[in-house]
Amino acid sequence: MSGWAVKPDWEPIAETIADVAGPEALAALQRFCGGQRVVMPTVKRLRKVGEDHWLAVALGWETALKVADLFPMGDEVQIPLGECSAFVMRRKRLREELMKGGSANAIARAVGCHRRTVFYEKAKMKQEGLL
Image 1 (cartoon, rainbow, N blue to C red):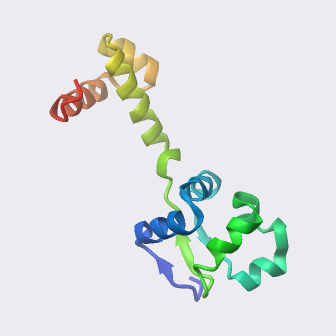
Image 2 (image 1 turned 90 degrees about the vertical axis):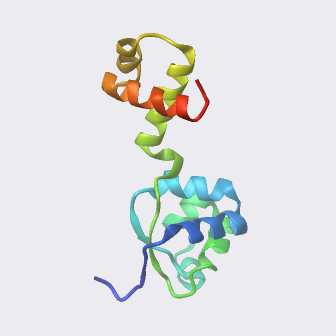
């Protein structure tokens, strides 16, 4: 393993990025490298590589500078998938289909999941007062 400190608790970092660079920047970062472990560049490194650095490509130059300023040591972090997660997207679609109604088989076929998953999610939604 490298000499960089791995930041296992991403949530405070994600909140800080959203506060400093905006929620759009966090979402763009998650789309670009969600689910990966990356080394966040220092501002010095970012300026040296320039606009071809992956962070600048993902966020744009000015936003990348703001984010890089949060990592003065060039920390290694894991980027969460967030809303880009296939699980999150499938669950959202499943809930949308449940709101429309229909048979468990039809919903399972439309979403690409098992019919037991449909029943499980339907029970959760009832518990939450959504159905």
